[in-house]
Length: 482
Image (cartoon, rainbow, N blue to C red; front, side, top):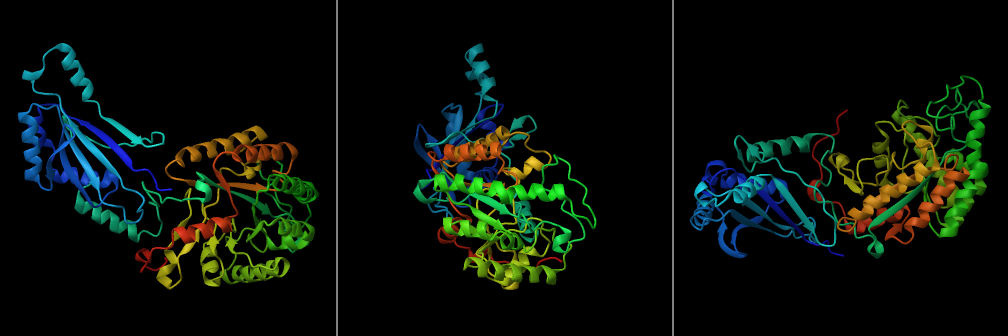
């Protein structure tokens, strides 16, 4: 399943005679432009004349010579072929492309008004990207300099300085950039689809659980959260949660069982403990349990030691019930310490408290402290039934279905060359209602014949670890800011 090579044709137009190209473009500009725009480090540039090589350009003098030849032959363009070396991080990718420097000829070669009009049209900057077996993906370049349109790139010394600053910044804003890794999902699937069922009923805030107030979020009150009831039970809030455990959960289980699909349960420990029949049903069907906190509370201000104790209690309880410790973790309303606590515990294969990508990735932040890289499987807040109880949100099951379908369709389209991952967040008290459950079932039927790999998150994690192990060259030497 090697990714097809990408062929880019970039047409750059200039005012004036081709002999003046040297006044607005230097060879170093061209090199930096190719590096930045095509994300390449090692490549060759060749001047092509009628598809035959004329000059391999490695210096300003050879670039000038190519311009001289084109000028003498009264050519309207200078076609430069980019031959890229094999990409070391993605060996299946061999990008190649062209930069077309196109000029209106001098006045002595404009024969008529139509020719002059055509040359004016040529001055418009155009980009054509062609991908084999794929649709067009837009790209843009900045190419304007005074009265001439010229190749522009960040100067090499400034780029190096910016890259260094980027490395030192404690957030990763770049990600995979223009060249995400080839996922190579099983069966040649274009999209890996992960269904996540949040199991929270019975773990929400309640004075019965030792909390000082009732739950106030994630219910059917509409876009506004209800005010918590300090020191009192809120029977209405309790019953909205209970719909999930009494009715919604079993409807969802039937939908997945009928389609032979599996989900990952984001399992709050005290919720599983209060619903042994549901816990056993998920075990028997082969669904995965990932740790979702000991209680369904906001851990933002919980002391690190207390959060770590909750983690240990939760792991031990889930393992005692299911026979296996959870290998993934998602807290949701996390603290700044959550991921570090999970890393220090040492038994998780992947973490989920992240929304920043369409693919799994390795987080090297804690390698500076001697810990291994953290495999991160991003979660979602956009394709999530929780938006029925938040703003902006869904107000109909049709909107929910369309959001799932449109997201899948776009990722499936991109997946022709760069397979992606899609997550759907579910809650039995929300999606378990009949109309919403039907929308979920319809979406599952829709993707069943469309090159999708429906997988538990542990299966995605294991696939990624085997195919794309961590890169030791990216281990950090910096320390985590306090």
